[in-house]
Length: 288
Length: 333
Image (cartoon, rainbow over all chains, first blue to last red; front, side, top):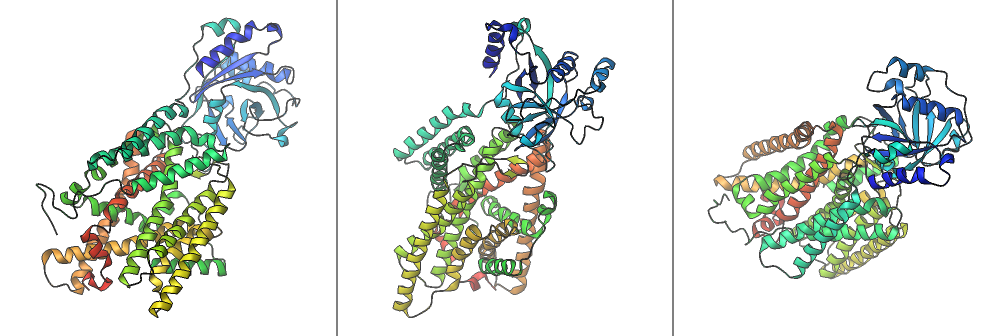
């Protein structure tokens, strides 16, 4: 994703209509980066305010407050961030919020300003990353940007383990937010996203194939047989990690994974057998 | 007995629309009697494997290597809670009903052999199809969903299989069930006796657990409880037979009670160690949130149990077979 983000950053200013390109903001979160394409055409006053807050560094250390996997990921308002706000940042945060600008619909990947239950000072600086079409929010909250790059990060945020009240179990926050301009794009190094599940597909398939091949060769030594079975299990687990998230879109892949799981479990019922029925091993003391 | 009790309880829940409040915190449910019984059966398995150097040396890979592999899975899940943990939980949740099915089949065979009930290999094949058919049907039904269910705060993937698969598996299950019943009826006519109910109860109980218990929310807790109870009774019997045979003294009720108390206390301590101390220890050492550590440790303990259970109860081992197939009274009472 790092390469994709850099590519996006490098390509953006070179586009023919560079002057008409929307401003972009990078949110570096502890789960990876998000590049937001702002929509001044849909919400000019909100975009102006957001850019001012980002440039002032007000979004640095803002935590994720709530993860509702079927609706949105919501960040706390900047007044609830981990670092103390400077007077300048506070002044920007408590400035009167712009009126609702509802031209952009709340759909997957849009960014909306919300006032959550914990936004008691009503600054209107809390961001929500929308995870599903939310027509009920249209016209009631200002949607002002879309996630242009970093869908993996968006999904990682969606899948963050949470307590029953939807608060993340492990602190997730915006490490840094900055405006991505042409000069910065060529020199900034974007942070590396967390390791992708797809990376386990290759090793998983390799272990699975090796284990099955070893079983087909019918090794005589019990340890070799057990090792082959274990390789099959570990390989299958690698494939499960890599493919389970995608299986939801393919009934065939899901069925294949389920059939594979049953086969692996069946294989494991004979993982290890004693060398001889109830024989005392060398040096071992028989108790019964 | 446990299977029959579960059927009675299921009927009571359905007819009288009884409800148990499952909205209590995970801590409370961990302390509940059903969870303790379920947890104790894990401890009993570990005790059977790790109680002596002899048993450990018979299964060196299961006793030594597998805990390390599973520990790696647990630590990987804590390190990458978005990548590894969901699939680790998924693996456990898929394996668990398969493991239940293995136990159901094993218990059916044991009780049938004890009672001299043998309707033939085709009948046993049909019963196996019935038992594992209920497993596939229930798993396929659950995995036809496209959302991501939660397990102690960890969202794990559904496989998104075709809903037809669940229907197909259910059809195969009922077909196998009908074949089994026909073959049992033929055996009854030939032998001029009724089949022993105890041999049929485990499969019937599993069918109810997997296929019909969804509307009764309490069975989320009660199924592992009855599974644990089913397991503990033969394990206790085998343990008592071995203990009473070790010293060669004549068995007595007092001695049986004493040995039972010692064994029971031991597996309760084991339950506490596996489900209280271990998650806390692993979570503390890894610096992980308590709920996340509990979820993945619980999955790890279960997966370890599936490995151990798969090897230590092989009936082909003469000592295991002799102990399990002997009448219950042979426990020494």
